[in-house]
Image (cartoon, rainbow, N blue to C red):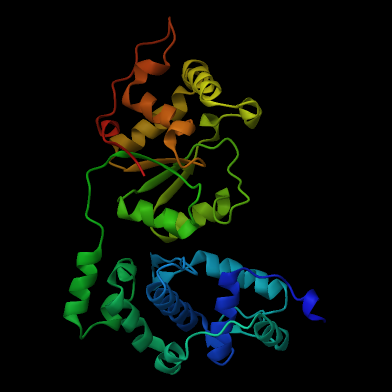
Length: 322
């Protein structure tokens, strides 16, 4: 295969494969994830102008990147990595690709971490970055002789907040940064209000997003009936068009969905912190703000002659746009 026929890779993929190569080309899953985490932190710290290669979330064994594993699956499909569920293994073809792209991890990092594995490696990540150990199921075992580190992890946990209503868009966010926003806001339930919960952006189609939420202890629910059909958005050209769309949505569409609104109210009444999600970063450009306003003031969506409005949900008054 000529150089021009090598598969094109994102910069983050090149770094990931180069790191695996200098570590010998064969590393266990948990070890490699922790080494990749430390590598990404060091690269970001040493070059503040460089965006993070991969972002991570606090997971059951510490720092974890969903995106790195998605890239891994693609590398397996391209025969860059061996199809092995337990280990990251570069193929001969993969080594040729690493050589072709010529990305070289800092020798100092490789020297310090080449032989660091297992609990010693995990403990280092927990010591240096306690936030990423806040959802670990193994911290007590790994750090049984380090009460100060366990205390640091406890102090790094996001502060408990009173239940409330949030909205969040995933535009310009990675899956990991999106989840970290929810975790740090103490959100316990993500309510997807897209009509069609599919996305070309990795991590935000329904199945992947639901699985990722479950992995960090957040419940996922999809209420497609609260979405706006894409056909109604096709001719939106300016702010006035958007305002008319949201007025129509609030006055005509939402009154037809009392059951969906009541489901959200029931979650709030049960003490859940609920985040409404859709695509747009700015809530004013997304119909989720209409849903949030309807929960704060149910009379907004009632037409003449309908039943009396339900009382506002107290926790909905604490609305935060993430």
